[in-house]
Image (tube, rainbow, N blue to C red; front, side):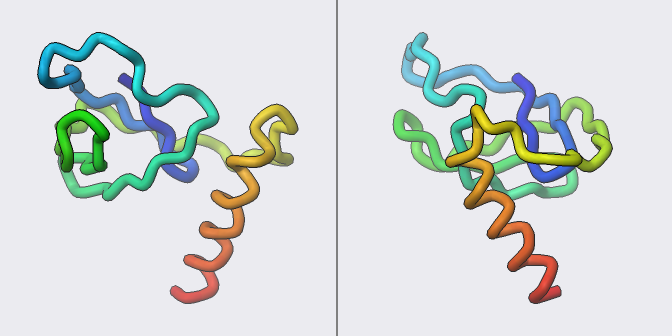
Length: 88
């Protein structure tokens, strides 16, 4: 599974728990993720807090402009990113 966080794409090893076979999240859906050195941690509706190992990470070039098809989700991501940069 690939997850984009900011300008980095992480490839992680994830298998749905409890015999689930449905897609829980898809492209353009925001999800709060904690990025560790070797793991990503997120809350799952099915299994609660889930920690997955990072297999690979790739830095992406900054996006020049938002994709209008993802605008509602990107708006809040950009706001959070700008706030985080301002507070650092």
